[in-house]
Length: 115
Image (cartoon, rainbow, N blue to C red):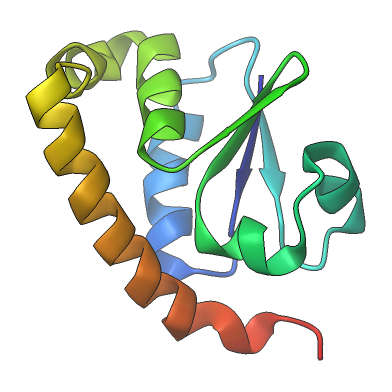
């Protein structure tokens, strides 16, 4: 599974670094900053990649709150988050608030996009 994240965003980097410390086999962490290969692999443009966390699992590309669920499911220390947030009502709330946070982070970081 490949996880595509924005390493140039302080908040994104801090969170992903927590997950990276778990040294889980089968997760490859990909910085999307100026990364044309990531765009090709996900078939997403730089704006789409910057807007949300993305995962490529096999040939399937998953983004947003659902991508976080998959990360948490893979990491034993964070599996409790997966179990809690996957319930339908909680997941809907999580998705809603994730999109709000992602919107603000995107606007904070969109200056890094190549013109």
